[in-house]
Image 1 (cartoon, rainbow, N blue to C red):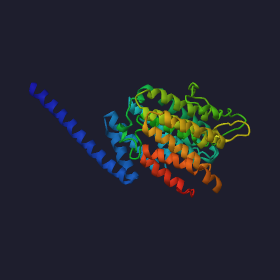
Image 2 (image 1 turned 90 degrees about the vertical axis):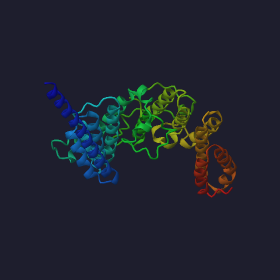
Image 3 (image 1 turned 30 degrees about the horizontal axis):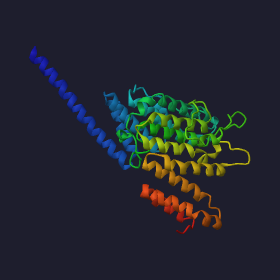
Length: 358
């Protein structure tokens, strides 16, 4: 009896061993195809792993990569349908990954099909996502991000460097984006900055005043249903507070992102009478110059100077103004060079295009 039990146990262990090696081999093949850009072939391999794997995390990894493969093939609708019909029950960070994936693929789907009317799409089973209005799609995107942000206390402790398999981190600045929450917020900000297809001026909430973002600390409480310009600032400031003293560089550079929102996305904000975003930029430049003195982190100081010089550069409307403001730009370049030579070189290239000669 003992011998029989031993043989059964040994057989079970061996089966686990061979199954594990089999899936390791399958993943290697699928990942190699994915990295080569042969996404259709990679998709077939990932689908096979999903159908055979008994390990929920391994199955999720293959499912995730399969959806990514569809995205690379511009089959966003099919990828969204897969996510909406997913039968798995991802736990822990797999759930966070799924929410982020869903939001980002829906964003691409909105860009691809947002201009279509529902009547343009044939009513075919399995194509429910194509019958969604742009408003409904945006609501699903917002809901995914909001669910993700509910776990912010956990995600701000989750190093982004651990996500090399799920995210392309090759060009990521980990000083600015140290955690998964930083990545998620940046993704959400990308959505909020996008032009919305179904804007209705009559029903649209008024845009927030840009001047409120000039403050050192933005104290407006976080409300997910606030207008996009206001919500963007609230998300950034919430993340600033969550970083505390742990990620000083990220915290200080986030403040710069918040300050410059009305410069890059002026359509999301209102400005005082007879003023526009150029006038706001002049005020933002002064704030940046002060922050360059007050910030603790050298990279954040350099970023503040770099952005201040950019604002100077965009004000150079004619040769006279170029000559007048050349010394101020050069001062920013020189100070930036002492803090961050790489950014200074970028700035020099930018300024040289305006025919400013040092």
